[in-house]
Length: 136
Ligand SMILES: [Zn+2]
Ligand SMILES: [Zn+2]
Image (cartoon, rainbow, N blue to C red):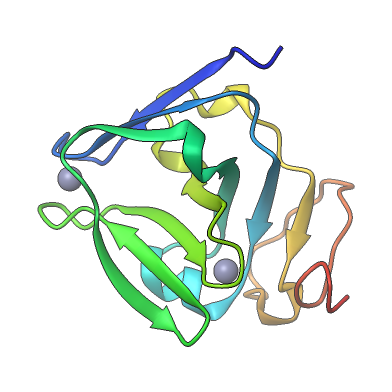
């Protein structure tokens, strides 16, 4: 099923996107930068091949959030939309919460649990990594 289409956009509707194909990966991120950037304790990211993502209305503003990545957001309403690491420009993460039908993607793991807020009790059985998948 590589012809599935995922559409979404920001809260105000100024930015709309479409991604074609299945996400390469879907994860929950507990890191402090995602927390600050979204205002929420966890951000769920759906990773797509950059070439399959198109913006059908508007474009996200971008901001360098660290020395390894850029984050995209709606300049009008502030919704967090994208994350793209410098080391792998062929992939781009979309905030699963901005998908029109977020139920169609399935997270597979938790990242950066060492930064998780203690009052959020998530009891799924997905694998958990203290930091990134590669760092363990
Ligand atoms: Zn917006
Ligand atoms: Zn994060």
